[in-house]
Image 1: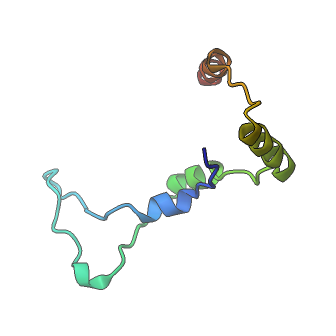
Image 2: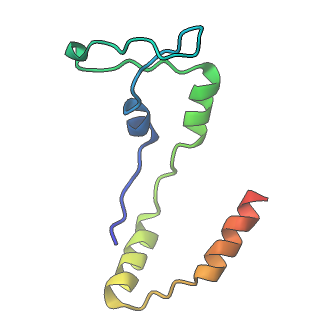
Image 3: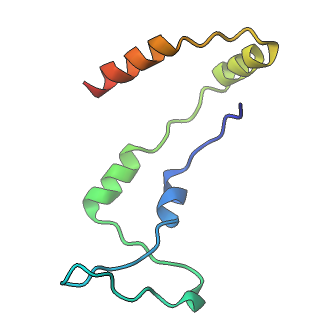
Length: 90
C-alpha cells in the first residue's frame, strides 16, 4: 500500500473542455495544437475546490502507520470504517 498526496487542482486540470451549445449538443472541441485546455471555474466552483483542499498530513502519524504496515501489526476493522463513513454522511 502506498500513501500518496492527491491534489484537487491536478484533477481539475485534467478536465477536457467542451462547451454545450444551446441545443444541448457538445460544440467542437478546442484544437489539439494549443497544448493545454483552459478551465474557468465559477465562484462557487472555486469555493468548493478550496474547501476540499487536503490538510497537511501529520508526518509523525504517517510514519507510525507505515511502521505498523511494514511490520504486519496494523489491524484494519472494516466494520468500524464503514460505520464511520455512514455517520459522516448523515
